[in-house]
Image: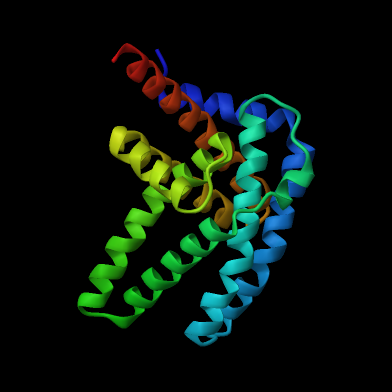
Length: 207
C-alpha cells in the first residue's frame, strides 16, 4: 500500500543519492532569495518586497524540474534550473505578495490574506511538481495542482506539514539545513504527485 511516509522516505533517499547536486541547486535558490530576506529584515516598502519575490519564484520552478528528475530516479543536471516557468512563477509570487499585503493590512483583508495564503500553501507544491512531471506550464500547472489537492486533500495537508517541519529544521539549524531542505521537499512532492497521477490514470483507464 502506498502511504505518505513511504513516499516521503523514497523521495528523501533519491535526493540523498544526488546530494552534491541537490546542495548546489538549493544554494542557487538561496542566492536568489537573499535580496528578499534582506528587504524583509530592513522593512522595505511593500512594492520592493513584491518585486523581490519574483527571482526566487523563477528559480523555484526550475528547482521543481530538477526535483522531478530526482524523484524519477534519473540523473538530474543543474542545467534544469534554467527550465523556468515565468507565468507560474509570477502567479505564485503575486499570490504570495497579495496574501502578505492582506495579512499586514488587518481587518477583513487579513482574513482574506490568510485564506489566500493557506490555499497557496496547499496548491503550490503540487502545481510545481505537476508542471515539472507533465510538462505543463502557467495556469495549466496551477489547475493541475488544484485538481490534485481536491482529489486527495489529506495528502495536501500532510505535504504542508512536511514543508513546515522542513522550515523549522532550517531555522533551528541557523540556516545551515536550508540549502538542502527545499530540494528534498520538492523531491518528496514530486514522488507524491507521481503516485497520485498514477492512481488517477488507473481510475480513468477503468472508466
